[in-house]
Image (cartoon, rainbow, N blue to C red; front, side, top):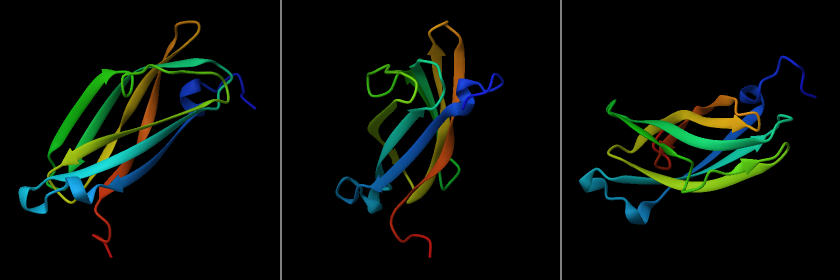
Length: 130
């Protein structure tokens, strides 16, 4: 149950799943390709529209790339209360492991904008860490 002090930013759950794409990667060319699937779950009592995304992608050498843009995969989905939205995309980094993190900007029907944190998640080839 949502209380009056709860904001949509606290009640949107972000889940991630990452896969290494071996056939598109080239270890000798420092090209490591990953796909990721994001699930956004609106647990607030408000209808929210995803307006934009901001990513910070960091490889194992500390190189950082910032990616910003409207929506996700060409869409700006609207999530009713209790609804989920899932999409898949990808990232290419120069090392066998790295991280991604960032935030979505969403707005409610009243036009209020909310910054929804995307917790840091790892990009790594299988069995790289024992």
